[in-house]
Image 1 (cartoon, rainbow, N blue to C red):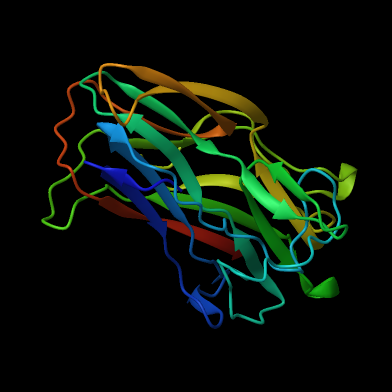
Image 2: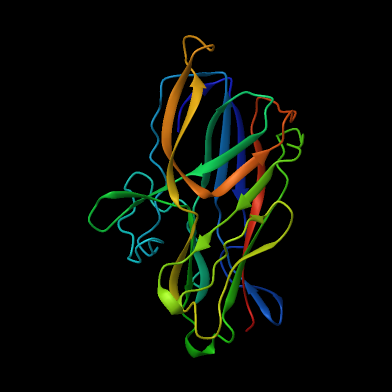
Length: 270
């Protein structure tokens, strides 16, 4: 990420029960992990300060080319660990970074940056943000499982709400043929309430699977320069078209961090 001055940051943090299965009803069990989403608003750019991006752990499946992602980055291993050893669990959820934007009264539609991962050959690959699941319950898995997500409102440290901000997911897809879980193609506004993102049957979704959110594309935006805020410069990076935040025009904001929670839920009928 970049070091900025006059920054307003919007951070969205996913939260769930960790460390074991939580039984909410006889027919439901849950498991999930933490993830984070951020968006920055600036008046000018400072010198970049490079931070090592989070990398999935070695037991996570690449959503585009199903192989084990290995190794973890030595300087920032396993950013979203799930300590649960449940046979059915969420193994990894990508953070959402919506990039940096100049302060504006216009409406904003910002897409999340691509997720960098390390492959077994040591190369870095940019993929769409993804959710990785494991189901090792064998023949006792019943009718499979469903994956859902819900986002709360975003507020700053003084409880001022970022009114109207919406987190929207689309094109959640799997690679793997007829045994893969079923994703979704339509928009899922997780700020409006609980949305089902994936589901399986007794014959699908067993083992390890990763659902990619959208497809990776290059994106170019313009930001004010450090020396003269009236001069804009192009900034290009890779995004996914499957994760976005929409903020209405004339939204009242403070130059501070806004945060909320996304609750990721993995449910099963047994």
